Image (cartoon, rainbow, N blue to C red; front, top):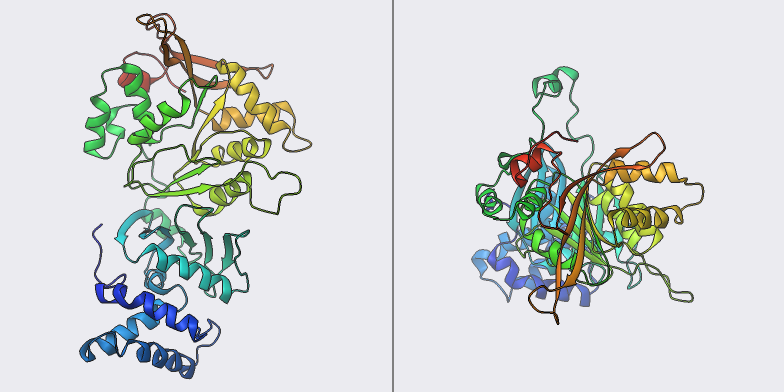
Length: 441
């Protein structure tokens, strides 16, 4: 939705805000504590902000600007009005952009303040709740005075300030209320297996324009978030390259979490993303830092993304957290080394098994089947046109269908690119999008 002028900082506020923040810090003046609602504390802070603004704004703007900045620098600042909106379930901040999930619908409010403002807000909330941040601790998980859950990541762990505020119990509804809004109504499948599943007409045309059946099918998977995908293959086979190309088809407005140990994934700038860079493991003797599997846990339990992208599964903790995320109804995407679909799945399960004592192979395989829908296998071969060159290509697109009675994977190969275009036809989506015909998972 369009940005509402009642929300966010005005141009004059943005201009003077850094000076006000710096001056307050120099004078060691803090906003009123959440627990102190006295008019005296509020007036004292207002007077301090007004005094700083006197030489910075006109007399005509002084009072209103002082009031807005006083509000913006207290509590959760410009996010506070969203907490008062009826039906708000979650508030997202990604850099300088704000979105609100309200009555089951994600509403985008655009750039409401500089990213630096939200970074200062995170630090202020941390200080106010007695959980100060440090270079080694750049995540914040606290409850606000109103009972809301505040989750945040700060640079350099994340590439920009990221905030989620989860609002609990705002709308207590009766069973009759739920019935009226369709809770017990029968609904059509969320994904029908056709281009009609793509809500954005421009994105639908973009997917439809792909001439290769395999490319069109994979683009459809990204555009609809219809399934979780592992991109597998040997070293330097093009796993990250194809994923970067396909990431261009993610729905722009959906919250996406990108988690990497090295920055390799290239998501389009307009995407609504949270990106974190963290090590897979901490070396012996290293100072305590948060690892990628811990970041994964925070993101899928607190940040409420529509999809999680893990740059590559390399450690046991990452493998287990990735499978847990994929089994909680969130779409999950990653790359993984493996010379075949089967060997890639074995590597994923071996890593997960070594992450936690007591896990057995059946339990892990059930997590794999429950969370992973597709494996896209990349490969490479000497070019037919230039013997000095290497071609990188999609060798297989395989659906992880089920486990048999012996606990072995049941795999449906939708596409093979090793000897021409040998396509086995199993899913309705492949029929309508990829060019085949057949049943579905």
